[in-house]
Image (cartoon, rainbow, N blue to C red; front, side, top):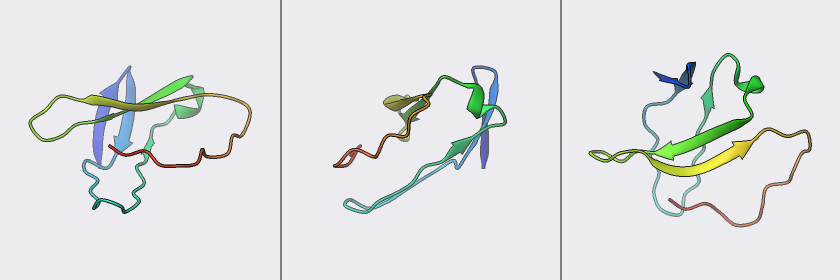
Length: 73
């Protein structure tokens, strides 16, 4: 696990996630106070490159089913 300081929060996540094209993958991230944040942003960083924005999530009080389709990066 790697620990990254982001917006004064200690974030814990796997340092690397790999898959092959057409195969599902799950990425997870956590920190002690994640429930109190309004928004979580996800970035991808390829070797030798800077971070690139992927997707964001917003805090809400309503469960929403996953949309059909897939996210490809």
